[in-house]
Image (cartoon, rainbow over all chains, first blue to last red; front, side, top):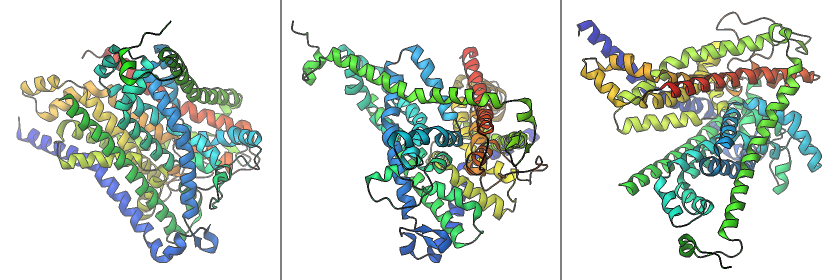
Length: 298
Length: 298
């Protein structure tokens, strides 16, 4: 090999190595910019009023509590909808469904994963919310529940595919042993396979939750944009405003470097931190599963 | 007649009520029902959008500029804008994405740094899209002074796309049997020659599938371009990378929430064009993947 080629090989190797570290660079950069633009909010707005219950930026009320609870309510509703449906469908695909059913189910779930969230929001405005308003006799169809329903479906593809992977990762021998003892397929699923895949299913739920908390467009379009603090259980059927929707709808109108601008970045920092926690926990949970599987099989 | 107990039932103790055979039937029916409930709204949504949107589609609709405050005419600038953004994202995300995938699959040692890369990559994939928008605003629009532009929006979208390209690319590269590499190296090829001439060509279909799926997601995103490159309305097509641009998803958001008196047909037509665009990309990716699987000899 000529000297020139050796140098070329070295350069290319270095470029590839550098590219490998890009994701660390970008996460660090994102973190840096959110802190740079978001932390000044802490000195400009007193902590007590930042944690207050009134979000009314025009009059300098920057209480993010209603936004936090708004995100919480919508996420909770969505998770309650998406987990049974998503886990159920994932288990069905992996364990029971005949081939023809899978040939319909799997592409449909993939299509759902590919539908942009703005399209879901659009259908939410035009079809879902009028329907909910009429059938529940509500003053407005743009409520937290409408958002939860849409986001539930938005989270389903993630939950289904991670659940399916987890079920498929359960060794065949587990199922065979259970069936050999005379257990029915149903008993095998709930007695053996699902418990064996539980950490994977937990990961699925976590990742689905992460997807819901970060969802922006659909939730902004259908939840009614009312930053009020929920007073009780009926809050699910009232308009709310999430953190993501607040950033998306207000960032376009603020002056760069203003207090409002810094607070919006601060909310971004809160979202980033939440996503970080969810993803790291999901990562740790799924890696414990791998370690446990290795121990069991050795 | 007394039912014959299986060993499984004896070990777990027979439950009251239904026999295990009846439970089996009920359980399977229940899971099938869950699958149907999950998929039915997706099918309904697709059918409804096609039925409502199809009458709006004409040559004029996809080739003309909007007129009368976007209430009539076509959506050409939005289509062209989404094309530009998708191409820009491809330009900025494909080379580093594939290089990073090559690093993780072929070079990365099993150590702390590699684990850190993997954790940050998972986090990058889990960051809410609106937070990417904030980051793009902070870094590309304001700090690097690219302004609200196609350039800034494409760069923002490509960071979001990167984890998809890296993880699917790595998977495709790892699927190439290690004997291919061994043979190549033993014939005197260097590591890079092996990667370029053997590993990359063999894994190309998988890599392309991942790239298209990543770009498809970027093409349908609204939140990351809200404050980095999207324009409410432009009377002409963007001329250079520093121009802001209209885009299909943002245009859909605008005409369904910000413009009063918008004809419903135009809205459904826009949804249909957007869906054809993103789901068409997904279809191409699926076809490439399944054809490559059918042809694969290892």
